[in-house]
Every structure is written in C-alpha cells, then in structure tokens.
Image (cartoon, rainbow, N blue to C red; front, top):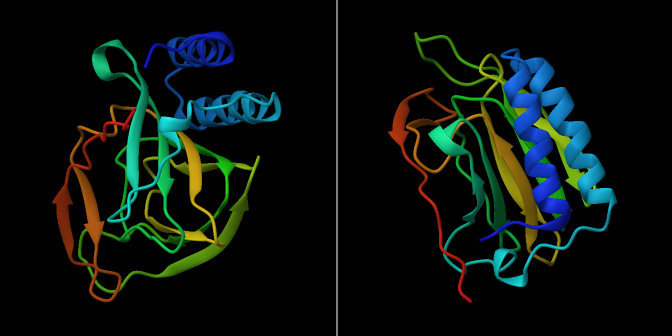
Length: 187
C-alpha cells in the first residue's frame, strides 16, 4: 500500500514522535492523540484492508518504518473471533476504526509462571483509542463483539508481523512463542 493524504501525514507525525524520544509512555500518549485525530478526521481505509477472514483475525500492513522501528496495521476480526492471550514485546496503540472489541487484560506474569491474574476488561468502540501495551504492561486477549467485523488501526514500536512474541495459557501461565506474520489483502 502506498500511503497518501491523511494517512501519510499520520505516518510522518508518528515518525517525528518516535524520532524525538525513547520513552515508550510518552510515545504511546502522543501516538494515541495522533490516532484519535486520524479517526476523528473521517479517514477511510481502502476496502481491501477492512476485509475479514472466515478462519482467523488478519493483520494487514499499512506501513513498516525503515529498520522496523515501528509498524502500522489494519487488524480485522470477523464477528465472534478472538485472539488467544498474548503479549507484544513492544509498545502499542490501537484505535477502533469500525465495530467494537472486548479487551481482557491480565497482569504481566513473573517468569516463575502460574495462573494469570485478570486485570479487567473494557469494550472499545468506533473512534476510541487505547494504549494496548507497553513493555511493562503487555498481556491481553481481544474479541470482536457485535454482528459486524471489527477493524482496528494498530501502531506498534516494532515490526509486529516479524517479532517473536508470547502466547499464554491463562490457567497455567505456560508460554509458547509465535510470530504473527502479515496477511496480504485481496484486491
């Protein structure tokens, strides 16, 4: 995808933020403000970046910064789909483009394992933005709620499609490693 207009301005603005500080809490706060403004502007994703899969949620890359310093994605869940409990290993900001998602957070476990401790849940709706993760607060599961697909615009502090991440068994705390990869939108 070749970004232009409002999306290119957003990318340029995020690049400025990422280039001026290493503090991920400051980065996520500033990126959340930029993403809120993008969603409020009426920006429209190309239709191929909003299509769900019947099998699983999909991650469409919108922009991967040179050197994989950060990435921008359209993440789409069909109605009723959910993720396993997972971490990101980086900071992240999510804005709901359409639909709604239920986020279930967990306290990041110690290396010793054991059942995960729930830390609350929230339903995010169209136009709302959240800091989904920082490296010190990074375990959750997400489910699409409602009768229509959920589309989120996600900004991460790494190339989220290529980094090794953690999947958690919430009952035992057991960890498996995975790489989510990227999906290619059907044109």
